[in-house]
Length: 265
Ligand SMILES: NC(=O)c1ccc[n+]([C@@H]2O[C@H](COP(=O)([O-])OP(=O)(O)OC[C@H]3O[C@@H](n4cnc5c(N)ncnc54)[C@H](OP(=O)(O)O)[C@@H]3O)[C@@H](O)[C@H]2O)c1
Image (cartoon, rainbow, N blue to C red; front, side, top):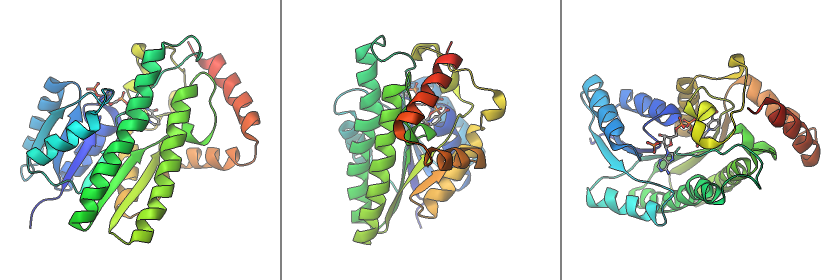
């Protein structure tokens, strides 16, 4: 029997890298996708050394480029690889006032967080239907559940990912095709994304609120393999989601706006 293969976008860092470590330990072959080739090659070599029954393929790809998802899908097919588990993890964040942030940077964020994720889901879901099954994990966020001033476009992209994934979960179930899709909603997670000078302001969050990326990845993969539609990681984040249901969206925007503006450096 062949090893299953997982494709992980944003495999060079943070939650994506932790997903790769977990899947390698489960015996999955990996297709590692991100922009930094040397780093991906080092990660691939390390994972293969630690898990000698697996093979890793590195594909560099800038998912902000037009047609990047289609090109990635073609690359995978030309290498005769069959994807059983897709993790749409690559994501960008920009903090600050919408009118002051660079427009091109925000367009790229929409391209990576929304367009590339949607295209990859479409392309690989069809391939998985033809092969009789598979799993897709789309990384949304706690930010998906509320409008967030000063993280405006980012939160909107994640609201899209959550809504798109939950609706698709229902469609795939109705098709009874053996393919499942899950939205993973982490809260603040200890990765470079929480402290990246390239993304505008830095949101200062108490370290007690940060979840380890390994924990987030493990919960997402478990939820996806068991066919759940949505997973919010950690009890504190689940309570936050429950509380958001008690307020109007404009009340949530006021609360979030105050919090983000007073904690943004
Ligand atoms: N950290 C949090 O608090 C948090 C909370 C909720 C949700 N999330 C979501 O979780 C996912 C992973 O975030 P993270 O915290 O692990 O971030 P991270 O540590 O900054 O890692 C981001 C990954 O995405 C890749 N990437 C970025 N832009 C790309 C592009 N244009 N094309 C291809 N790959 C690209 C990066 O690799 P290269 O630089 O090598 O391309 C990197 O591997 C994101 O979707 C994020 O929105 C994060």
